[in-house]
Amino acid sequence: MDTGPLAIHRHGPETGVPLVLLHGFPLDSRMWDDVVDHLGDLPVVLLDAPGFGASPSPAEVAAALGREPDPTLDTVADAVAETLRSMEVERAVVAGLSMGGYILLALAERHRGLLAAVGLLDTKVDSDPDEAHANRLRVAEEAERTGSAAVAGMVDTVLGETTLTERPEVVARMREWLSEAPGEGIAWAQRAMAARPTRISALEDLEVPALVLRGAEDGMSPQAAAETMSRALGGPVELVVVPRVGHMSAVEDPEAVAEALRALHAAGLAAERV
Ligand code: MLT
Image (cartoon, rainbow, N blue to C red; front, side):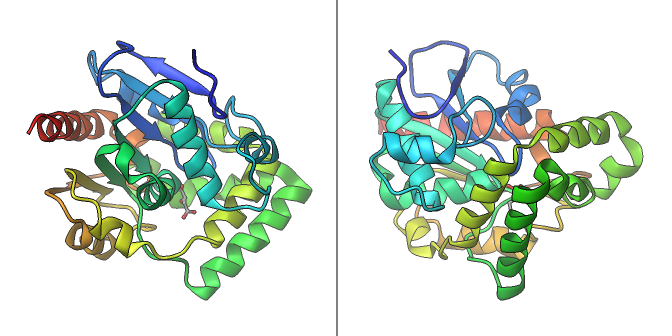
C-alpha cells in the first residue's frame, strides 16, 4: 500500500524499476504530464514536493519523518526516499528539473543506494551566490504576505525566448500554474533552496548512468553548470542540449525530454543487469 509522506501519481505498469520525476519550483507534478504522454509503457512515478500539488504541508511532511520543520531539502530527500520505500521500490531511475535536481542531489548524498540512474535537468550543483540567496529570502517573505503574486513574474525567466514569442498556449499554461502556487510552499521551498550546499561530492560518488539536460535558452542553468555536473559525475554521462527551449524544458519540449528520459531509463536497467 502507498503510505509515504508525499503525494504519488503513478502512470503505466506498477512493477519494474520506476522512472521517478521530481518537479521544479514553484510548480507541481502536472509539469510532467506532457512528458508522461511520450513515455510509452514505462512505470512512472510523479511526486509532489511538500506544500505543492496534493502533498501535505512542509511541517506535516517533516513531522511524519520525525524531523524539525526547518526548511531544508534534506527533509524533501528523506520524504522522497520514505515514499518510495512505502511503495516497496528498492531501486529507481530518478530525474529532477531545477529544484527537482537539487532534491535529487540531496537524495544522492543521503540515499544513494536507491538510485539506478539519475537525470539532472535544467539544474546546477552549486549553492547560491549571495545576491541570489538574499533574493530567495525576500521572495519567501513576500510569498507569506501575497501568496502566488510573489512568483507571477517568473513566467519571463523560466520560459525560453522562442516559447515566449511563438507559443502563447505554453505561456498561458505557465501563467496559470504560477497563479496557483501556494504561498506556504513557495516560502518554505525558497528558504530550503537558499540553505542548500554545493554537492559536488554527491555527484562524484554516483557511479550509475546519468543524463544532464538543459534547454539551449535556459538563462537560469547555464551551459557551464551542465558541464560542471557532467565532469563531476562518477559514471557514464549523456549531456543533451534541447534547442529552442528555456528553463522549463519538460514543459516546452516534452517529446525531446521524454526521449532522453527513456534512454536514461534503459541505461539504468542495463547497468542493473551487469
Ligand atoms: C526551479 O525551476 O525549480 C527554480 O528555478 C529553481 C531555482 O529557483 O533555483
